Image (cartoon, rainbow, N blue to C red; front, side, top):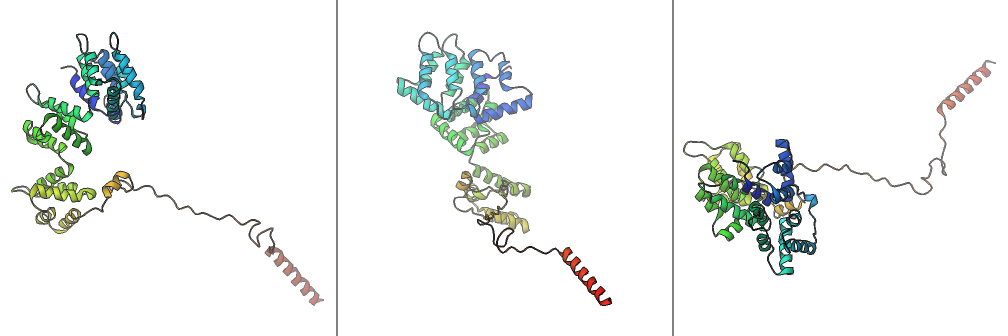
Length: 366
């Protein structure tokens, strides 16, 4: 009932500036109102908590300084925490316009300058009878490493009152790149001493469990399991459409995919395709599964020096023909140059010849 402030904090704290900008555009497109205005209208979102959420919602990649002055930021934060009361607006102004990496550098600079942890100082300054708990929790999330904070949120989602906080699990696991997911898994193990995949299997069940595990597991392993599931069983036949979708456009990762499939099934992917398929369809899939990308194609794709098969080819640049300028004084024999011969007028030549012939004929008659 009402506003889920915990969900708001989770999403706003873990969003990068690029994701936040796209989220704000998508929210306006779907619901016809700006995200900042929508959060400001919620009665449970007020005071410093509202100001912080609105500042985070306005975070745009173009507003992030590439090289912030950490000495100035450290002084602003120190002044905000010293003396009577706390300047919450100054804290919001410093923390809401930085990336996670920049916050980590700011914490280190504050520690070197003042010999104390910025997170602990801000926590003590925002803890009290009249302080907002949601505001403090949001600041603590910003002052914690992003992947570590996601690991905390995942554990909280597992430890719900009566069941899992499914929305908390889904929102923290979807739309993560493979490098991001690797960091999240590592931090979850470091913080909680357990495997994230094992906890997902323990606390979830059925297709929901399979879907969440597929989000966390390495991409090649998930595809290998999909290929295994698409093969024929006791009753169902081979799902040809699934095999086509899982094996096409995998040039750069086909070698890893073959290894993962062999780990999952104990069989060769090429051999299984030959046993399960036939005809031209078998030949096509075997050719795809047997392909090995040239060495270094993944790094070239990341560097942008090679185009992925999924991408459209770049527009062809028309050939440019360079014409050498004429030599000084022009070409020999050109108009106005030595050796130029003026062409005779054919009409005048024909007229003169006709007149000469007529005159000669008249002289003969005489």
